[in-house]
Length: 580
Ligand code: PEP
Ligand code: MG
Image (cartoon, rainbow, N blue to C red; front, side, top):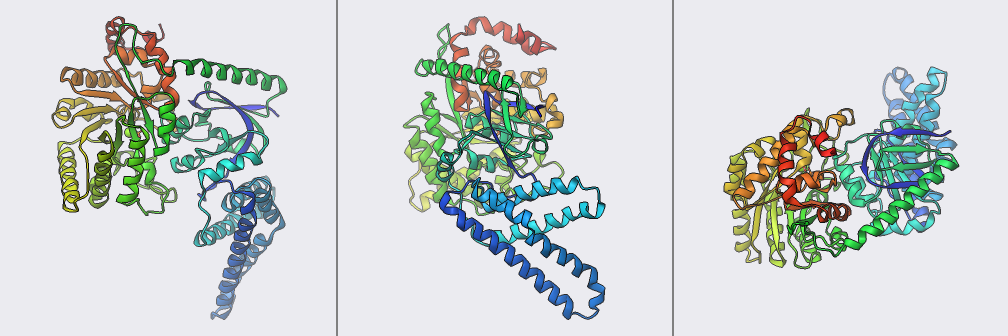
């Protein structure tokens, strides 16, 4: 049966493929493809985990038997018997084996996928007693997963994932309830041609990583992961934010045509790759890349980015079970990015974890308002040893090329002064060790309304500013950027947002200081003319957006846009003026 699901369009284009469901259970596991050679090893891990849990249960039962008042434990004993039976259940065993052998899922993924399938059957049962057995099944699977966590599991490598591409004949699309940014990074160089998640907003970090992968994506599709079945044919329309499941041949043909049109458009855009980004009236515009890992410098250079405007270093820190990268590891990563850009500047942002970017996917931030909590620079300043380590690594990388240091989420003078003191200390520490380091220009992100309003204060302390519109919108409008329930209120064109952006750009220009936008607004082609009209000359975005934005720049005349842009900012309905 054909049906469609609507969500937020976050990454352009059309993807058509078979659904790969990443289990959405509360049990959070790694998902990756294994190679043919790894299949026996994964099956062995599953067998060991099962046998281990059976033995664990037997031990508990023995203890109960030995204990006085065994009768009191009769019910518990019976429950443990049920658990043992579920563990040996052929539907669980055979299903898991199928995911590993035929689909090359890693053991944990296979186990949770099969759990989802069986759980659905339990949900449909009439008998309440049998329906309740679902919770027992979840418990035994959880036990197996915990057991596996104690056993060394092979680390998924992007190369390994790419290799597996050859094992699948049909293109694959990923469907999940949610994916952490760290999960997304793991999928970055893998086989998927598109993805869908139930949760998330346009500027959630998961969506941002999707855009950097340059594959069609829809987030906030609410119940998609429950409605779509493994192997269903799925069309993802990343422009319209629509997911069509089991399409008819006519619909499939129509989207196939759209997909080819998209390819032709991309091909056409690639012709302006080497054209300088200069407006009709001769204004030279700086087009920079946002990256998450050093290897992203390759796609950045392939579209002629003139530098990196935002290196989100937190991706080096995430999903490591709390073991943070040391100075040497970070230095190697930053140096790789600097060298990768062959002399072009690289802006390294200090770690911005917290809120929707947890350090570890298994550790949920249970503070009431994580986005207003110990995030970004606040966390860095609360962990001085970690922060100094990062600053030293950045300063060392600066000896290998042009490096700018960017500080996220600042609001207070006291924070600014602490950052400066830490930077001086990091230099001192390197001098004491006689380690080579280089000069850095230091900039602040303007992503809290207070910072935008106090821009003069910021300019006293910094060489340049970078406007983080994703958070600036979130905090100005009090809209959680990851919450699909309020996604319709997340409005880059709200007059208050535009006034803060316009004011920041104007003040920087008046003082002759550099200013860029590095939030998603910079890569949104519908905003390019407005930002140019407001005086912005430096845009930082995912490499995939550079050429579409350049096309807008080549057609623009900033002299004609100036008065119009002021009108838009002052308007009660900027969207209407922008559409004209
Ligand atoms: C922003 O907030 O606009 C930004 C660029 O930072 P991030 O998206 O990483 O929070
Ligand atoms: Mg931000």
